[in-house]
Length: 339
Image 1: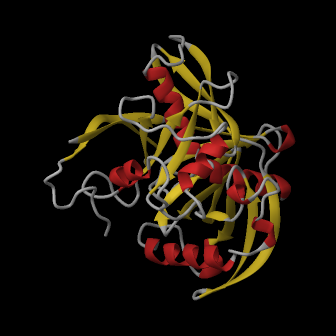
Image 2: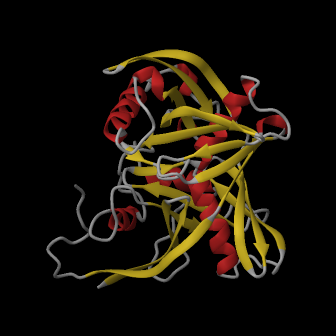
């Protein structure tokens, strides 16, 4: 009977299931860097959005499929870092494969590193957790007060704008789409351009629109990243709407559709970085101002842009459980199923 141990968190409602590959029974993922390990995990000829038979992929599928997981599950394999400058590395995964960036997961990993004692933390004050991810080195600053974690600030790799107002035809009409890279490539579109509002009731239409836009941009040159195919191609589509500004800056609500029509329950950490780059280029976000970024479930991240396109996104992460999942050899459903 095989077993897999996980520690689960959520950040603003989006789950993150952590698997430490140093645990007994976990196969190593070959590669000299986290980016190389990500390519290995995807598998020969694969892409970041399709299941491939790479190392540990049976574990990924086990943890995202029912009855142990669900279609919206997200997680990461903790692996060695690129060098001693980081505390550890991580390979991000979801139901349909692997991703190069994950802001909410970085927040969860920061909390996990402190909770487990992997990174010593003060009773009061901040501690930095440095993490190598496929898109580069990121940082989670864990904020502490009275012996508990009160928040995490995720500092991403630099974000940049790829293209503006790209016309894309959907079944709901033509939308003007903005493209930005922030560890992964995101396409942003105003929900009202498609006659939609960012609400739970509209999720089926929002999801369909997101899938159509992602497919339409599959070969668009602005989705290409100079570092190669691993970071290229639209990972997520952000459908957003304006809310009244706060005294500190813009206020928006969004839903991010990623992979094969999955919905980010959080405001999307790396997607928030992409939105910050676009807002800064529009002149809507200046020094000392914050974006209040709200999700479809009402949870919130706050983001700001620094020099050189570097972004910071602040939120909170909470542990939801520790688990030992098993596979009974007599179980006819084996590693699970998806609906």
